[in-house]
Figure 1 (cartoon, rainbow, N blue to C red):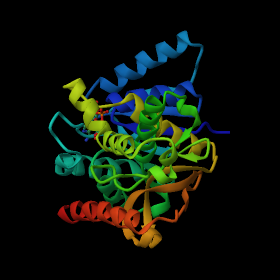
Figure 2: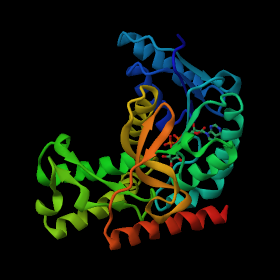
Figure 3: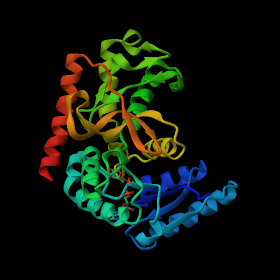
Figure 4: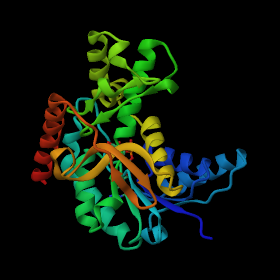
Length: 307
Ligand code: APR
């Protein structure tokens, strides 16, 4: 038996927190890679010592040497610049594209059987790029955003209704940007659509806040972007893949005609297991919902074309 191995590229806020979550849940050994000398080694030592206190003993290695990532089961890419106040995710396009390209080329040759999980923004475009550079079958390349966006919507509904978030289920489709599509009609409290529980005004407000969920935090922090929830979202995806749970989670997956879209990565409900994106779930959408989804896809496509 060989322990599962997850490489996290980028030992920044999201990467460090993700390494902690994976090891804490005993999911896999973790290799934390960063381009900055000493940073991943320092974080790995700090994490190991924290886990010693908590009686955990998963391997966590920090490195600046890609050869340590060999034979990973999953490679998570968080390397790149995060947003600053006033920046959109698209402002990161060029600089993060060159980073993601370099990271994918350097890792995938050493771990040809790995599944790539992309976190770097602008998410949907970076996931497409990673797929192209990797040469992997599209099922083995997945982008994290939907779990986070759905959780944000869920949190805001819980705050508004003053109930536990545990009883709320939300659906968010589309790109991880201003045109993402939180779907109130398919978001429920124990099966009851929120359209029956909240006023139209409240729903519009919560949808808007969800779309701006990342920017709201960037603005509050002034110097940094969200990482507790993003790392929790990646961790849930890692768990479904490593443990072959076949959970249906919203994530950026490769579309081949689903929702009338093809040759694009975008947020849809997708079944995640050892094979990667095993199956895309096609929800029945109303005409205006489908039109909004296509508008989101068009904006992703425009950025892919820019690259
Ligand atoms: N190779 C490896 N690591 C790199 C490279 C590279 N070419 N370029 C940058 N990095 C590392 C940085 O040294 C840093 O440690 O990526 C890390 C990014 O960490 P943070 O700046 O803390 O950013 P974080 O908040 O973790 O966000 C990472 O996720 O949500 C997205 O928009 C966000 O694209 C950003 C990414």
